[in-house]
Image (cartoon, rainbow, N blue to C red; front, top):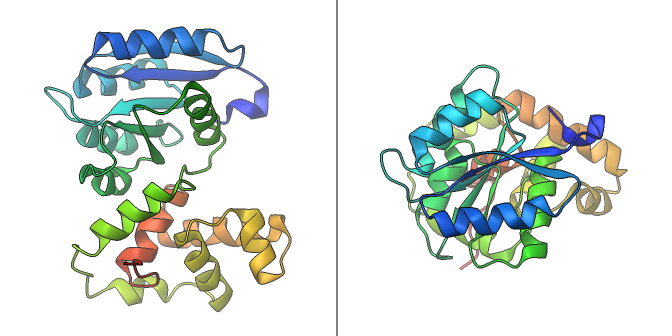
Length: 228
């Protein structure tokens, strides 16, 4: 479900328990020709129901909501048949929110601070809708590294990487460092298209939903270690 493939508007679902926040987002998105708000939810349970009913391209998901928090809602949406291509953009108030790592593991494609500027928010929605992960901001990599160190690496972690070729391991390492396909290509002397192919193959072999989960795998398996 790629909005850019058909030139149809990017359908966005707003999930936040604060009415003023939802209203502000809706006003901003309604001004854009390529974005349309298809629903609003005041808690995680409604977010799941609305996602099933409207099948949005992107869900702006607050982490802290009543009844069902954003992480649980993200996990339920990601596990719902037919909603595999729905992208979740987690919204958080604080850049130290420890739940971000859990949200990425649950199936989120990235996260954004609530105080981000309008241009940054619009860019994030379009990036997520295009199938990319919002991992470029320094704060994202720092958070992933910080909370990955608190996780016990499973005994089967290295066995998980055994299915990858040496080149795919190299690509996964660079994805873990937050590099784009163009940057990976430049680093390994590959074309962006070839880099994208290696990323896609790594995702398929590791059962990763998107690039965000590849980053989680890279840290969890120890392929990439957090920088102090």
